[in-house]
Amino acid sequence: MFRRREPVPFAFLAEAESFRSNVTPPPRPRASFGEIAGRWLLGATIVAGLVGALILAMPAMSTPSSTPTQQSQASQGH
Image 1 (tube, rainbow, N blue to C red):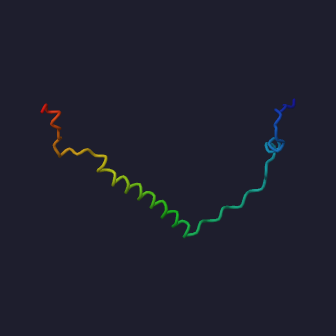
Image 2 (cartoon, rainbow, N blue to C red; image 1 turned 180 degrees about the vertical axis):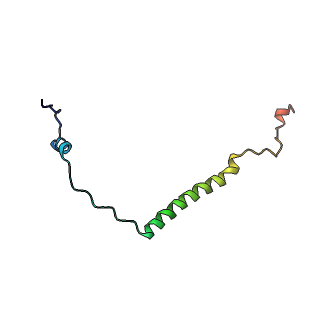
Image 3 (tube, helix red, strand yellow; image 1 turned 90 degrees about the horizontal axis):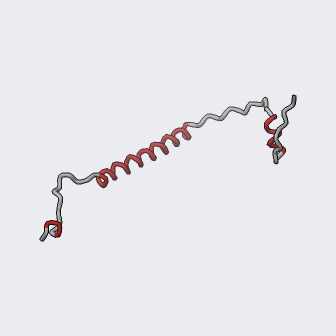
């Protein structure tokens, strides 16, 4: 008929399961124009930094294919 609950070390955890509030929280205030512009500017700065780092790193990651490969004299048997 009644289901027994497992013992909980903290009484407030057991009570929290049965507690339901009928009070709705107040709506969040809308962000101002300055806050929206600041968030957008921060995001654009982060993206521009990542793109700039990628552009600067591209020459270092590519292998030079137009220059002839240099071999040392030891590898030629001299």
